[in-house]
Amino acid sequence: MKKTLATAVLALTAAGIVAASSGAIAPARAEEQKTADIYILAGQSNAVGCSNLSQTVHGQSDAAMTYESAIAADDARNKSGYNNVLYYGVTNVDAKAQSIPSASLVSVKLGQGQNAQFMGPEVGMAKILSETHTEEHPAVIIKYAAGGVYLGDYNGAFGAPYLFTEQYGNWASPTILARWKEEGKKIHKNSGLMYTRFLEVLERGLGEVRAQGYTPVIKGYIWMQGESDAEHKELSADYGKNLRDLIGDMRSAVAELTEDENARHMPFVVGKITPTYNGYTKWVETLRTNQETVAKTVPFVSTVETDDLPVVDMKTQETLGSDVCHFNAGDMYTLGKRFATSAQRGVAKYAFTVTAGEGGSVEMCSVLSDGAEIGIIFTPEEGKVLARVLCNDKDITNDIKRTKNTFNWKPVSVSAFNEIVLEFQDKEPEPDLDQSKPIEEPIRKGCSSSVGFGVVAAGGVLAAVAVCAKKKKK
Image (cartoon, rainbow, N blue to C red; front, top):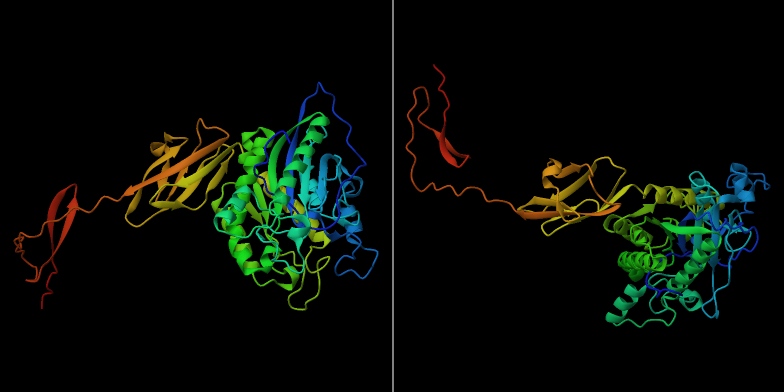
C-alpha cells in the first residue's frame, strides 16, 4: 500500500467471496475529471449479505412470489443494475489466503451477497443513492466483510467451536490491540486481520474508481456487526469502547489513505443488531445499548434501528429471516435504504463537534447546519455556570441567544468542519449577609405585634422588609 495502514473499521459477515467481474463501467474520458462519492460498507454476515433471494415472501402462499421477484418489481434496476451506483466488494477471505481476491467495479444489483443467490445492504442503499447521483457523478459502495467475525474476540476462543477469528481474523484496530496488550490479554495471531485487509480492499477499490476517471470522495461509513460479540457477556460489555476506538482508527486511516482530512468527519452509521438475533441472545440488549452510547458520544455517528426487522417471532418462535441470524431479503432491502438515508442526512454545509469543558456536559457531541441556527443543550454541574462559548477558539458568547440551559447560534464565517467548546466556571456565591447586628423592629399601626423579617439583597444594598398581617376587626 502507498500509505501505512492505520485505522479504519467496517466489515460484514456471511460466506462466499464476492468478486464480480462482469458489467464493468466504461471509463470516463481523462480530460473530464469527475468525482465519485464513496460509501464504505463493513461488518459481519449481515453486511456480507446472507439474505436469501429465492425464499418465498413471508405470508405468501404462492411459492413463486420470492423476495427476488418482489424486490425486482419494486425497481427494475435492482435486477438489471444501477448505472449511477457502483459496487466493489470482497467478502469471506480465509485468513490462510496468501492474497486477497481481485474484484471489479460494477453496477449494484441483486446477487452481490455471499453468492449470487443472496443479497446484502447494497441494493437498498443504491435505491436511495440513485436519487442524488448520476453516471457523471456516481456513488460507489466499497465492501469488505466476513461471516461470524468479532470485534472483541481477543484470544480467538470466544466462539468455540466456531472459531471465526481463526478462520477470518477479527476487526480489532491498532488502538484496540494496543489496549489489549496493556491489559495483558492473550492476543490471537489473527487479531486485527479483518481491519488491515479492509484497508487493502479499500485502497484497491479506490484505485478502480480512479482508473475509471473519477476522483473518489469519502461520504460515509456503514457498519453492520456485533451479533457474534452479543453472544458473550464480556464482549458485549466492552463493545462500546471497542467500537469507539475502531471508528477513530478507521476514520484516521481512511483520511491518510485518501489524503482527505474531511474523511475524519464523515458520517459513521451503525446498524443496531436485531433484538431477536438467534432467537434472542442473552447479552443483545447490552450490546445494543453500547451502540447507542457510542452514537451519542462520538461526533457524527448515528444508529439505524432494526427492532422492527425481526429474524424470529419471539411469541411463536417462527423464523422470519432467511434463518435465525440473518434478515430476510425484504428486510435487508429496507435496512439498506435506511443506511443510505442516514448517511446522507449526516452531511451538511457546516458540521460542528461540541465539547463541554470541566464543570458541565452537553446533550449532543455534534450538530449539523445548512446555514440555519443551531441549538445546543447543556447541563452545568452543581455550583457551576456557563462562562464562555468558543467556536474555533473565537469567543461567540455575546452572539448566542440563551434560554436557561439551551442556546441558539447562527453560524457566521465558519468552515465546513468546526469545533464548539463550552467553558464553565464557579457560580458566584450569594452575598454574605451579616445579621450579627439586630435590626430594630418597626412599629406599624394595624400590624400584629408578631412581625417577620426577610433580608433581600438588591444591587448590593441590604434592605429589611417587614412582613405584617393585619388583625381583623372584631
